[in-house]
View 1 (cartoon, rainbow, N blue to C red):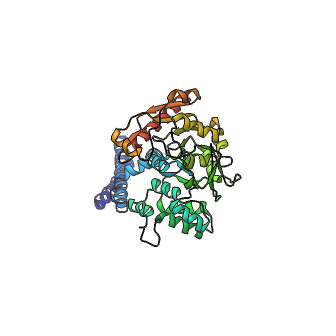
View 2 (view 1 turned 90 degrees about the vertical axis):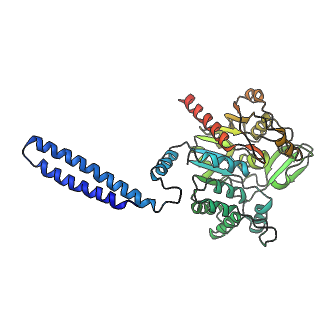
View 3 (view 1 turned 30 degrees about the vertical axis):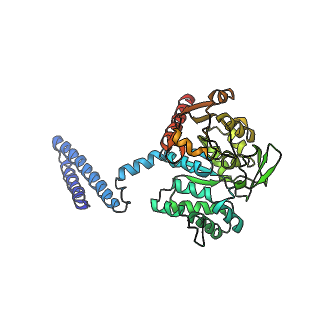
Length: 401
């Protein structure tokens, strides 16, 4: 622990200061000056000894692998000075985005769609009459500063032969927390955030138990997020079952105070736009003084965005919101390998064309760069995406100055 040596150093400093104090009482100028020097040296020894002793003691209580207290404190202090970034979306695209951004700033607010109606979230909505917890859970885990095991626990999915088959443990925790908070979903999310010690905030876009309704170009309609993808007809318009559903107060406050607002990658009609069609959200974003960025998807999604170019994605957003909702678009222009793309052909999913000129004609700044990360899936590389967003933000700051 090295506590004794630093305690001895501090005590030695006390002795040196005391000796210096005696010398300063002497009538001779030289000896008095020498006494001041001794006092200064003693104070240095006291500060050094006490500081090192405190670090040694605190080290015992830090998690394994996080023993460098100075670096930890510096990092947290640095992150606290970062810009206020509000991200809007849902699904894996949003959680993937904020996981990278939390290394840039701790002032992150994720505004998350709660209109999911499939899988575990859909079953819990139906049984307990709550808004969908699934995308909220993903974002909480992405921003968690708790040990990795806690994140794995929240993402654990029960096997099909279980009574809880298909459910995520985190979804069940949020559902139980809502019951404990007397049905207050926002408070339940805040309490769960404390459990996971998240870096930032996760806020539901609304707490109204709404569902999505899609109207297609052939005149048909479908209700329910899970049933909206339709390969037979393009989506013409999207709306909510309750057109008067109100956004959460915290989401509007976050948008108003934001330095940067990012519409995350993700399903265009079932993750991004559902947040924007909540009454007052698009207007709040349009009025915001924040720098507003849209991160376009890399691949089209069968039944939602078949044949869509990047500009088609932007047009859909503007159509459901308004033209002042964006300042800049971030688009991938790198080509994935044929082997990687071959796996997507069976899903009728293809690369989104980066038609840069069309977006410029719409009046938006455009940044087209390599954002590609290819593993089992063709998706955004977290590091590349994070770096590109930071470049855009920093460039905007320079211009603004």
